[in-house]
Length: 146
Length: 249
Image 1 (cartoon, rainbow over the protein chains, first blue to last red):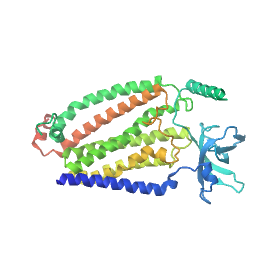
Image 2 (image 1 turned 60 degrees about the vertical axis):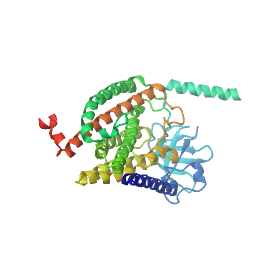
Image 3 (image 1 turned 30 degrees about the vertical axis):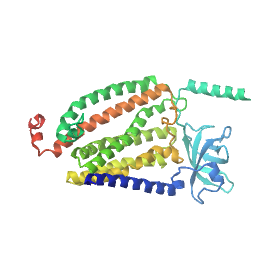
Image 4 (image 1 turned 60 degrees about the horizontal axis):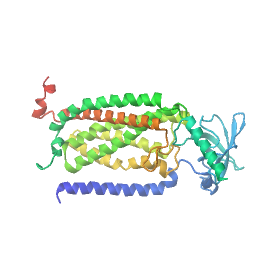
């Protein structure tokens, strides 16, 4: 083996070792890397006790109820739900049926009091009339199925 | 060596690469201008308004190309650094050193435009989710590489130390790329990937690809300009540099 080949082998071996090590580290860190937990995880008791945490999901259709600056709504992952109350300014993209991440604590009554509400938008970009056409096609398909 | 069509090792020597780079630079600047002008025109005037985010989404035409380049340039930089470490070629280390500042610029641009985009859409300039945090680490890796190289006086030793840092940091690139898939993040998933058709209107996609091409050409032009300066600096003691017209003048 020439010294050059030795160095190449050393570099490739080193890279493989770093890859394996970081994979193991991230597997161990898995739950800590998540930015938020889902309502299902929340009901399973995976929320940290006595600490503020984040729950993310969809704002359930028809769940937004406004009371001056205070907003009540429900975060859902379609399986489980978390009722949320928040006082403050909401981001523009905060809408029913859209993604949101809330940060705060759960009170004794099981209602999540949020100190911060973030809107989570998806990776789809399209002009308004195209979205309208997609919505229509989907509702037609639904009607046809029934 | 003589039976090869192109003798690659010839261009691994700074002496023959210096004039080659000089001839290529104007072409890459011209391509930057062409792609940049068409790309900006498509981005601002042709691409439609988004159904959800209105006009604000248009920052994507800078944000995504910058983020792509920041990751891609890191891989290129680390590859040059690794080649230099393995083959002891002088030019490799110079290429790595020349790419680093442009990579850092791209990483900074992606973070900055991301913050400007995040505030109106998400409601926050910054969150510590996996995507944003790993992108910030990429920026620090670039800064660390530049600082480490600058801290060591002997250029060849600086190259070696930098190469190890660059190679270790490579592990961060797939983490950035897949972070939105592996973990819950506030950052949305990728619009363009190999597994599915892009989920964006065709003209928007064209705008983004043209801007990405413009960023590519700019990065190549700047890196070549910088590597020429580095060659002159490091080879200043050699006869061929002393004989250059631009050095004599």
